[in-house]
Length: 84
View 1: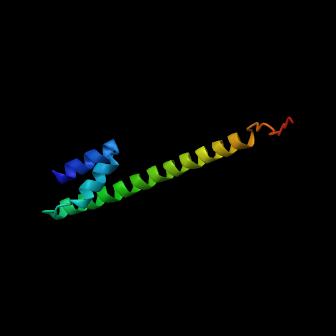
View 2: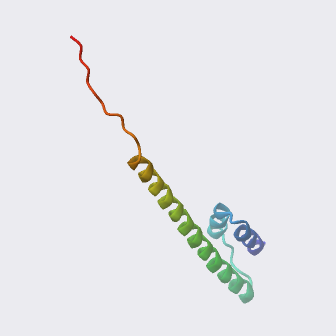
View 3: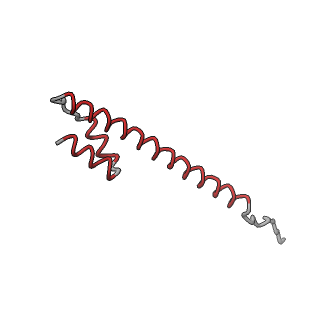
């Protein structure tokens, strides 16, 4: 059951579910289950690293856009008009 849920979470990219399943990983009953779990854990790690890279790229793109907008922003010249 755990292996099936873990596979489903990987396919659907449900990162919160992956974390929950990893925290509550049951003992495996056979060597083949242990090997499958190890493979799935490695795959989940790769998936998380890929998503992290994509997120960091998006953040960098947003920072560059904000910097560009700030650089091209027309700031009105402030003047002080005092009438006595």
